[in-house]
Image (cartoon, rainbow, N blue to C red; front, side):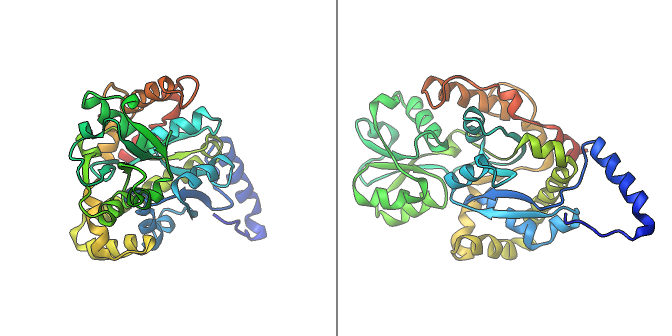
Length: 332
């Protein structure tokens, strides 16, 4: 929130309030909190918070910064943003490479929008043996691919990975240089639409919980502006309430589709592949547990995979990457 000019007569009260706020770690941001986000339905939904005035409702100033996914992480790592929207696995990558962050909010889990799309003639994951697969190496899509291969008796050694930016998935598959691509919506859908006869041979709906989509914040920003981030959380759950009301569907689709430059009709199918979580559902996923029903359990699975496959040198401490306190407060 921008600085306010207090009347002289109120100066001592204002100064006392600011001092107390600073001591309790609840000081307000003088500049907007900057959130880097990219093209994923659970993150494009932040536009609803902005357009519907939910940030203002909760007395928090937020600047949304639009990027391609990889560039959004670079922006966060270089200090251009206080927070970034990433899959839980990429929160770990950022932490492992020096860009410390805490997952404070679970937007959703992927429920079919992340897909392995194969050219005509390839009808199953097993058919990928010996084939070339376009994937953004070291990113969320590689995690989905490896689990798909392992579930079908294959391993990474059985295929050839071709590194590609996710937003180029449709062009790469259409070029004929690869036999399949791994991407999320809208890029997976673009690949299906661009390459006639292509099909999704595996999706995140086959392994729900392997990809959680989160808001991660730098520890320094949490320390300085905890109250503001709690208000960001409140604004997010206004988005969830708004989107759950069928009466708002038409307006919501207009807001979401406008951000990515497609029609509301084209955007609508993306929502079914994104399982947006209520406060109670997110709180349950925030509980430490083994398995994919827990953010920590899912992240531990990915953490082992990344360390074993040398995406980073050694496992990170997953518990230090998750702060459930904001969700707990929101759910009270």
